[in-house]
Length: 162
Length: 295
Image 1 (cartoon, rainbow over the protein chains, first blue to last red):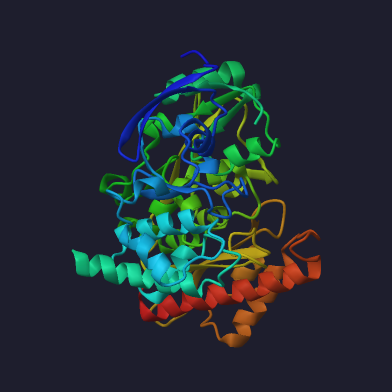
Image 2: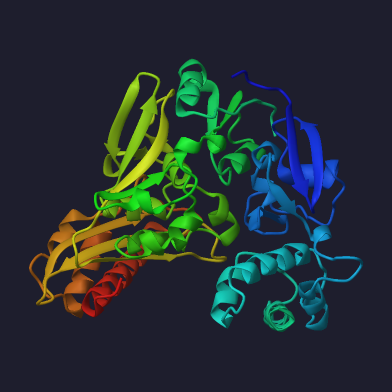
């Protein structure tokens, strides 16, 4: 077992297999934004607090800033670019538009992906479930009312769709 | 982030062999929620990162076999989120689930591990007080052998633990509580909930059929260099059916045992006051559960 100065990693990003050789200090956030050009994932606090860099790692919401790309080797990553299918917005994205779930938009990719993780886990969340879960991602524009309404609408849209 | 070399052991033996050679210059990374952030900030600048996240022995998943009658065994890679959600923990080990559910945010809980939260030694973390209250121990491996340390004696100061260079925490074991044991965790933060708390408190109580307290443990975090075990305060409950007056007395005595510091989360007097309030809340919550017989 030799220490490595670069790492060959392979992961699936939005369904597409990606092979890259990266320095081990590369974070998943840097890999996604800079190496793969998926700039929908936003960088802000770099400390796991704000949630702007949220991606789904094997379905679970994580902060891509607090994870080395090498730690995600072999995993499936979903970024905001992976939600819309065939040019049609995902029902969660549509709900955020319909219910004014964003203003400046910087937190929105993270909010939408966190909503996806919540609704995959709890398809019919209570208001309290939503507040507890979404409370971890920070929005400094909306006052959260529009976001909560968007999540509730998305839950309804997805449950009637199934 | 300062460049480093990366190793990815797949067995505990490989990890401890590497740490025997390079332990002083290496940082063990599990979930990464603290370690990667501290490297990004430049606070930690290791020559080597040992990624233990690919070691199956460290048990990333909980399963039924781990929580037999003898107690709960948590592989070091058990996530905070799975402690929060695992049905095997929600019952007898409800205090752990309660504390886990209050850690940072769901993104952090999805990645942060029980091993990492303990080894980091951060005084403000939620799990250590709950684990100490439940009498948990750490299993520590080195290339020379394995030792077990009660968590009550594991922490030596802020970010300082008994772990030596060359050692790796592999498992946390929690003894099965006696029937009738109930616990609650309470914390208070100023500002956003993911900020470090002013204080937190884990309380575990066992009552008899008459509602008398047979056993009680009170452990507080963020109000001293290591988790504060309030033995004298807990002893006030022995043999008593606690009323509001006694609960307030216990809380005040517990706050006396704290040793907080002035910082941006408040001055000493304020942290003591908050610690008392949190002990009161957690104790009342635990007694309520004991009265209802629900964990």
